[in-house]
Image (cartoon, rainbow, N blue to C red; front, side):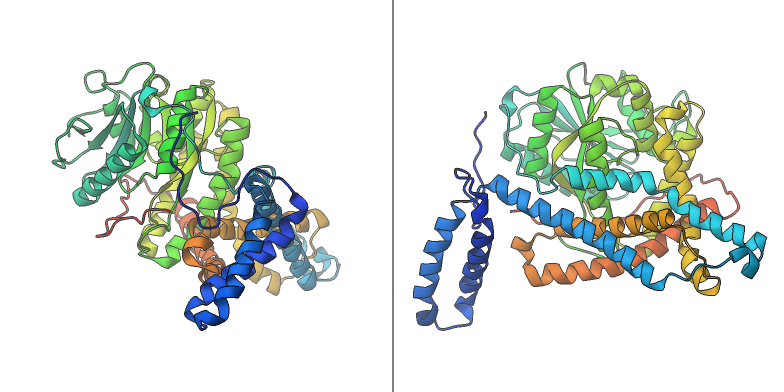
Length: 526
């Protein structure tokens, strides 16, 4: 195994002894030790020095009895317990407000009763998606170890980090490319290049590691692809593409920033060659937060990465419910065979359409260790427009006749769920006006989904804002704020759903570009 330097960690757990029964005692002593350590600024030094030293000696002996793997299992147990508690709590709350059994047809009439019952059944559409999330966070430990290089990066395949941009924010692209080049150099990558595919020239700094590809305004694909898909396809044209069999492509958005963990995960993934496509986790709150509401609302996306995405790609090796448009790692030959040229309807959510096509061609997918950094939308308007484009693109993917039915089940269910979202929200006010008895099965499904959604929000926040960096108090406050922002996110996504599914169909001829340019750098994760 290729050796790498370990990061200094004050509270690291030695790995040579596995006495699980000492874990509760070690946690208690560890907590006391931390309190005493933090007390230096509050109490006279003479009162705590001797006590702190004594507890440090005892704590070090106890912590040496617990391995890092045991601690991860303990955290995972607490995490799963929280998920179950939230589900049972949602069921208990629903039971407290449940109405008594009666005959709805006699009280409200047959027509209204059927409408209300059909609205209750719409909760079944998102159930498979949340089952995948549940399986992902229960069967797989969400507390991952820092990935380690399994081979020397000097011996890995050639990698192209391909950034696609409209070219509207040149300073953002230049700064992020500079930071990403530094990360690659720190890991020791040897065979790689950054390719920036843009509609508008950016005048990037020339160098052996950076290549600017300007898409000509007259360029058209044979199938008439638009927007980002058009630019991605141009980069695959024989006269432009410099990659061949055995090379790899890492797709990044213009605001995506690499981390050392992500690069290590990419090196390991591409070196194994076991899968043709892969993806990892993206977090949205590390660094300067521009809008706390949208950032905390995006916490559920991080939770979904650890849940549904990790289970689909890491266990089933299939993009059942699609994937994201950034942090895509693709074998160059497989990507050229799959192509991004599938017509205008495939251009609104080109990532989803591409995943379904690659799925139908029999390619295998894998999960990549490590996380990349991005920023959430800066305004509520951008948040709604972003969700609107996603829903519209996923709907077009679900309706496509070019993809066999069994390879687009996930997009179909996601489209039904998006369409039914406003109906699910209406159940709350309508339930106060016309209370309806609910079958035990529907009640259980409803509680399961609500509890899982709350858990995914909390998980995403705690994975983004670690306790070691932000402290226990701030993380607790952020967790509470996340639940409140989750309610706001539900309202905003319902607005996007109404714009896509419940308003007169208007042809969308533009690709809404979200502005994520800020005059600050991401904070390096330690």
